[in-house]
Length: 214
Image (tube, rainbow, N blue to C red; front, side, top):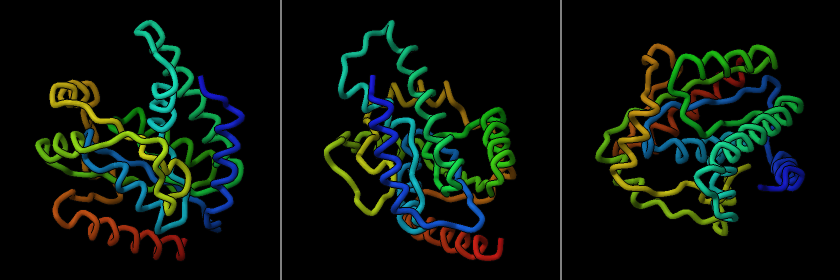
């Protein structure tokens, strides 16, 4: 598995690049595979100067470094969870704002992160991405996993950690993790269309205004 101390040190170095907000916040995202969650998370990180956190960054880094057998998958997922909790603990303790690049698709997850926000005195921002299946599948096919390539404007998990997979796997994941939350559970609904980046930037400007008035 990965070296926890090394990964912790990487995060600590990235924290030095963040903007300190008087009222810390974190962003959670809901969206199907390929809907543009990482693109959204990376832009939030760039423009708001906050940490981007992703469990896929840890998970796929393990699969890059080691040959994982089927019987070892549970162990990997337990490690990913342990690493996630450790990194969240670091951010909450230091009141660092961040965006969590993962799919918050059900009430249980929403309640968990709402509780985290309450316990740590954070403002929780909830964003849902609406997208089309055919576009999601196309985007996933174009992904290129590359831990040697970084977007240096992104703070935190800034390597290209998203893996590609086929249409069959897409439908499996979507059926296993359906979006169960309604639109009224979210602060923002963003449509991933030809104006996706513009839609994101509009939300970012609104978040900036609200952060100043919080």
